[in-house]
Length: 53
Image (tube, rainbow, N blue to C red; front, side, top):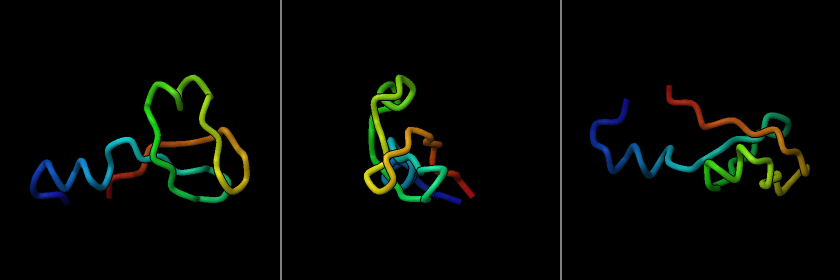
């Protein structure tokens, strides 16, 4: 996985993935939980955090 915290922050910090069209969006955690952020491509509000493999 990630070997140092700078890489972890660059790859996963504040990044969310749309559940419908799988596009990546960088946004605030609180805004996503409140439903203020929508997908640029499809307009969906269903977002999930980017998965760490």
